[in-house]
Length: 187
Image (cartoon, rainbow, N blue to C red; front, side, top):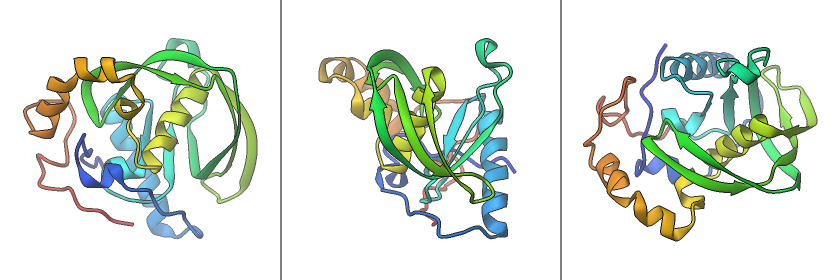
């Protein structure tokens, strides 16, 4: 089911999401809804808080990108970054901040401890676009948006766009929680 996406200034996006203690049928449904909502919005990643669920779950699928055509979709539960390497700046955008792009400095590689969709534990190193997408979505789980990581001078340049989003003066090709009257927090 396609679920509306919460946008900049919605309270759920500023909360630290709760960890999952285990799996139940509702988590499988949540993950399916997240993938469907993300793909409908033509995104590459989505965190549960973006659809109003304050749980530490995210999904990624970079296969829509030419350079990552063979990438397999990922489900990441209770992620914890345990190491970082390097640094690089890259433009980022976000389904919760539609129409806005901005440069963000992040580690170029991360060592991540997480659970998958079967709740099995993994520790792995990720670099490149996958590392960046994971960090961006993990930020959502911690109540941080990419615009919060931008340099102050760059953030000032997009302030009018952020105000338009906060006031609901935007249109998107995908459903927004505010338009559906949904800004509740579940989890």
